[in-house]
Image: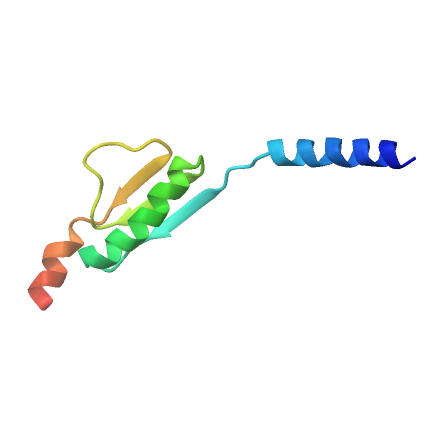
Length: 85
């Protein structure tokens, strides 16, 4: 009885560890401050590297494409905000 319970437990645990799901993540960096963007970008890039689908809305789009990472550019906001400062 104990061996069969152990075998079933190991089988269930092994099955659960192999099952992974990716998430669709929206990252919004609306403040045109590069230092604020860098912190969030590193987190978003790591999530994309781990297989999640990341869409980032930011004023600093990436020049080279990153797998699982999509940019929505707010680049036109940077001169507007810099003019107000």
